[in-house]
Image (cartoon, rainbow, N blue to C red; front, top):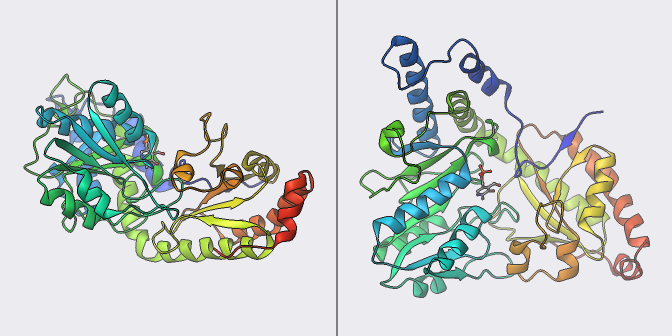
Length: 394
Ligand code: PLP
């Protein structure tokens, strides 16, 4: 039975072209890129090609790209470096809706004596830029604000945000793990100091990421050891994954102009269809500024996990903003920060598409969901009422 994979914000399938690019480095080309001999040298050259490919995706210069093990490491490294570069400053500004890679890192820093401002968002998941402006003080070492949210898909106005932060002379880092490859990202147009990327969100393998560091930005390595990555990130490189990541970036750049419109079309059809056929559905997140591949939708008085389990029976993969399936014990911190009612958070499902998603995938979800929601509502007295109340508009 085929799998309908609509959980691409969690991870993506490795593109065939990426796997092919990786295979020689898991086989005959096993040299150490730091070795003096020609055998290692050809591996080193592959890493440099990949660096150019990753840089091109965000219009950076190759020497501004540092390979890391994942998006999480890039996030941790960026914030830590900014703190180390401003040792006299003790304040961090971030948002309440960041990925745990930033959120929990900042919480850890707050236990180590830093003051952290977690900016709120409104009910559509948007930031108030006046609040950002006034949160930055002379004591602020770094502002870290994500480019696009992994749960809601909401895209922050990162260019404007970077402008505000840089006007105050403060380091600005953005987590672009969900944005790069899905929407155009251009570091020449955004005055960002550092930007995190991750391979497995754009059809590369797991275990590889990158950190963009603008030329001239003070940088302090997080992983200390050998001289790899020009002394900015020690440890023998994950060559195969880096080679694949480079190819994945090249593919993303090639496909983006056409694929993002096609993916948006399928996402919009899914959204419209669910609103038409499932009473009490509500879309979470700013409809105007959302990743083209993401739909976060709530079905009040139904458990998100129950929906996922029923979808799973048809080999349809999605994720929910409530406990367990998202791997945490708490309901989604993102939806809570947006003030989504408790009953709707628990009934939230995230569908995230990719360039491998087909119209038939969407048809299957649209065919199965009305029955699933109806049946689950029948099991709940509140749900029966909600089911009769009619659909909300997005
Ligand atoms: N940042 C965002 C916005 C993400 O969505 C993720 C992964 O879900 C990460 C960071 C972490 O990336 P990685 O899984 O490569 O550590």
